Amino acid sequence: MSHLMAIDFYRKRGFTPVQIKNLLEADSRQDYEEILWEQREALKNEIEHLQGMLRRVEKASDFYDYATANNGSFEVRTMPVYYARESIDSVSSFQEYREKVLTYLNLESEDILSNMVRAVTFDETGYKGSGMYIVMQQPSDNNEHLLLEGGKCLYTTLVADNNDNTLMEKMLVRCHRWAKEHQETFRGVAYIFIRFVILEKQTDENYYEVWIPLK
Image (cartoon, rainbow, N blue to C red; front, side, top):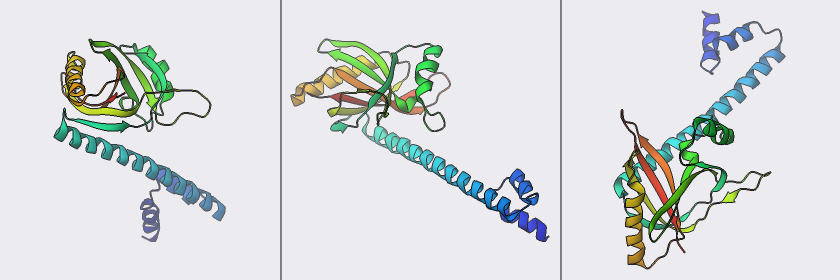
């Protein structure tokens, strides 16, 4: 009973059966110290990973609540700083995703959707084209990165089927109407992030965050 309770003692501290077996086979107190130190570091890393995951869940939940309550409304906000790690075409092959997207992401903690932005170019006549950027909010030390246009922006959220090909046109019409009413001028680019997804059997419903830099 004493031995079983001792094993339970370590189980309640997150030790796996293999680690407990190593403790049973340890030859010295130093072996115990090393195993305890390794477990402490492993738990710290797991806590940091879970805290990061919790922050991402909270951020997604907050955006969902905001977008649901304010879908299609406009605000003037200052866009966060984003740097482009890499650019790809709007429609890219899996090979290009693997070479240009996955290379730049830490897939243990970064998802693809949250680190991609569609950059849409337009003028008074309408939509001109678009491309995709892999973005980050801090530049790396060794490379020069394109700084996305930012500063004062028109900010809005959109909810749409991910197969809705009229999304860009409808968004730009509404934005130009707002600019005319408020005597503002755009700089000819809009940045569109996917911040939440409702999974469906046939097609997904995306919740978009849109930043349009103002002159």
